[in-house]
Length: 139
Image 1: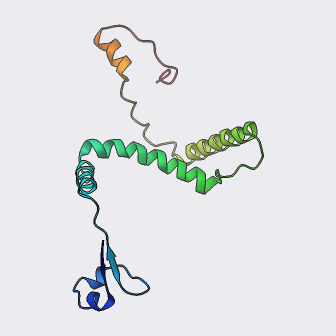
Image 2 (image 1 turned 90 degrees about the vertical axis):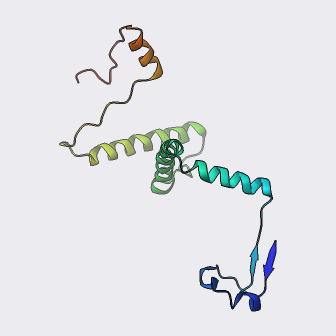
Image 3 (image 1 turned 180 degrees about the vertical axis):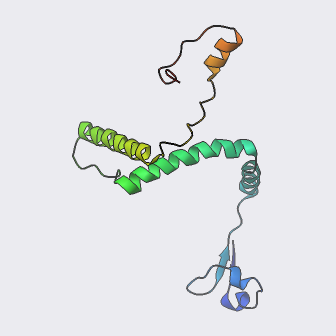
């Protein structure tokens, strides 16, 4: 840990980029070598396409959770008891789905189908016929 006084910080050319404190002094912490190496390794990994692809899924899920918490007040239940809380969550999820569906344009291109699962790929590779899902009937 290093602490710089106000007198030491004032002439610094990078002063404008520093954060402000009440006494205008700066404290800089230096993590242990193992932690610093871990940080560097993780930051490098975060730049890879594989990591960004995995994180995109997490980001979408966290966005949905954020919408429920801040947009629909899901941190607190209106009624006491687990069955009533569950009912509130289910009904809120249904309402959000209806809201999302109603905001889609009727002329919009249908979304591309999901990629096959590992099991479906196995069936296809071994030429085993698979039944159509109820989701794909009529398409």
